[in-house]
Image (tube, rainbow, N blue to C red; front, side):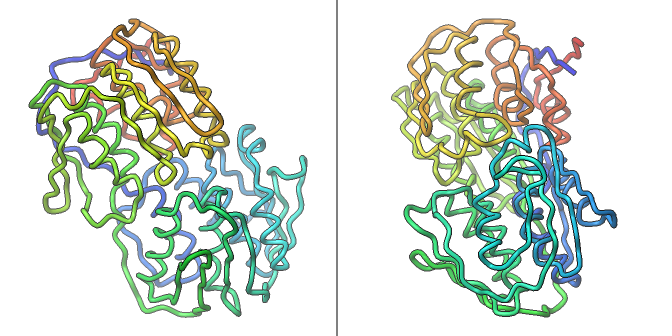
Length: 409
């Protein structure tokens, strides 16, 4: 499905309800397998979360998680700790080209039995669950935080708990802290000090219900819409809180650069374009929130603002090479942009080419990040249905704030 986007008058103060954070939901679903008396409300409606739920509920020996990278990492660790369970964990073609060797090596060091079905270092995996008694592991700190969180999530189910030594520079700290805080909410003894993460064993928890906060990554597209709109435009998003566990909540500070203010109300945020913002170059280290890099880069281009974004090395191994994808698609629109293996550099521009077809590379965030540009010029999003990976209601919500979509293929 390809969509041609056009804009009506942007409606102000529209209330949009966004489903629960994918990151929180997927962590809690693994913990719920360990503690069945954990109850979860406001789960993410993303494809990734659906794939994870399905894989956990299947009785057969093969679990296919499609493009869901978080599910691949978390399930690898979970199935490795489940005695007498044999699973083949597979996914899409892209998933079979996303490395997982670092996590597999760490689990093998703990005694796990994991085999590569096809290519060494990559899914699919054959996992034979075992009782793991070793309780110490070392892993590089600059790897995807999902590897580290995967180990943390299964740690309380291990007989002797787990100590994880992070070697070298640590990236994506907010996602590690998110996992830590969720463990704390279940009264699991866990700490993260300097380079050491320690999680104590815990076999039983009290009955508990956790309400998942809405997804801040999904909120980023509305921040972009308000930034690209005229002064006075506003939108209300539910359900968010000021003391968020999500690293992407830094949006509230970053988008001040574009004249967008965030007012935290009871269980919601009100975004308003208060002024035209700053025309100076935006310099931002996104090592703790790489998932919003695409949105920020497109916002800057739409406003004709230069930006230098760093800390983006993990984007090379996402659903696509997001840095190269951004360079390719923004260049088609007329941008002067360059990328390295961990950074993006966009120069000031005054022209946006119209009716450009934006390729999405099987990447949900490419489709959603570019959609707000329809406020500036007509634009076409190819394979637009890819958004369901994280945000099933995205195009309906775009229509609610004035960005209409017309199916052209």
